[in-house]
Length: 584
Image 1: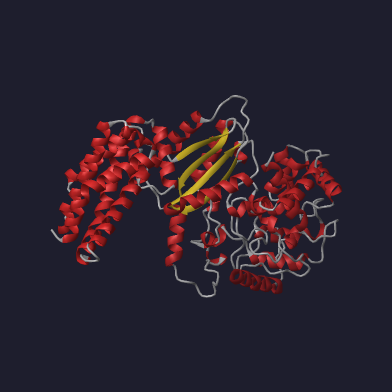
Image 2 (image 1 turned 135 degrees about the vertical axis):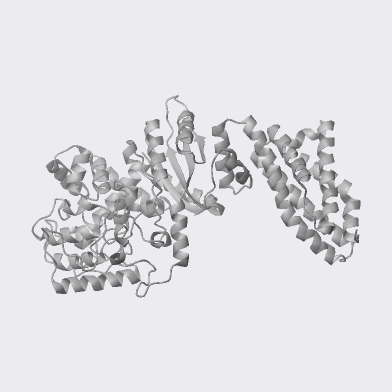
């Protein structure tokens, strides 16, 4: 045995005592060691054994034996059975590792810098064998948890472990019958306070665990309120990002996304139709003096030209918007938009190059079609929609947010995105399982809820939780389960920004107060925007006649001076309504 190993052996007993004292001082569950002599002796004996076994194996770079790992696992099982918390268990591992490294450093200093070869040998052994030892300790800890905790609490513990990137999750996942995916959609469902003594949703959470089999935990707050945190596997995001990393850049595809004519029809609206619609619609306007909405959609803001951002779930089809714009020269609704025919195929993409126009629609002229294709190429490389002649300049930032709050299309439509394009923009579709879980929870709870989601790899789930939590707090509260869906950053980015700017938030609250004379104008606008300003669909959802909806939209204009279907009206009113519903 070399001099460094000899020095460590000489210090082993004192180092072990120092570790036990540190446990008693810094970890609540070990505070009783000062009064329990037997427990203290057992803890000290284990600490001495671990150091001496290290010094027996490290010089020859020998691995821990199965018997060694079993002994380490048994210590983890004892501590788990004693009721040690997950946080304290993690603290024990961190403290032990830090003290071992400190002991090695002190031994090197005692050798006056000598023993370099032995130090490298020790560190080369310490890293891999330390990882094996931690795994065995966690395995024993989990064994005791399975005997001590109900299944739903084990699942909650798995969720908390994943959120703090605790190695315990690796052992706990198979113990509860779950697999750890590469990516997770961290989904937070916010439930406001005020249950009237009903209590929390523990029964509903237990039913969700049995039905959906994903890690989740209920975090109570206030009078029966709180938040449900669910970690939904998102294999689709992982596959699309892997495909993006390995796919060669296509010629002429500066944005890295497959062109719409090559099959990306399910995710992106046709910029060609939008461009031609803008040019053909320039001569027509609604009674408020605004061009039809198909034209207004072609503003200069990236990702907001008639839902060209690519989130098909709940965004209007720019292709149909373009066709509607071409048909809208003679008519417009009271909200300042072209007729609602454009919304019939919400979430579907524009025509591929060369596709004949649909029956009953007037085809664009050859010159307009060529101009539209040019506009599409420009939009594909710059990320901005071309500003059509006469279009209102400036960002229509809330326009996309309002479109995103529309009733979600089936998730199969969301999945039609080309590989990697949505992921690159942060527009990952919400997994089907997350959508089902949120709606099941809202339906069982029978209370208004709001949900947010953010996708990340396992190592970054803590950051994703912070994003999802902020989105859920900015998202509007919904009653009906069918209307509750987890929003993403792309759906709620305006509300997220506004919540951090008090004077803007206060101004939006003032706008919302102007709607109070009614009748039901906040609910009407919310429904109108969730249905992509489709008058027929919005009226049906409100269970009113379309003329009643028209009256309410005119009433909004009378009270606020804003036309609900204009670019400015969408920006202001959709944000005001969303903030009002989020804080009610």
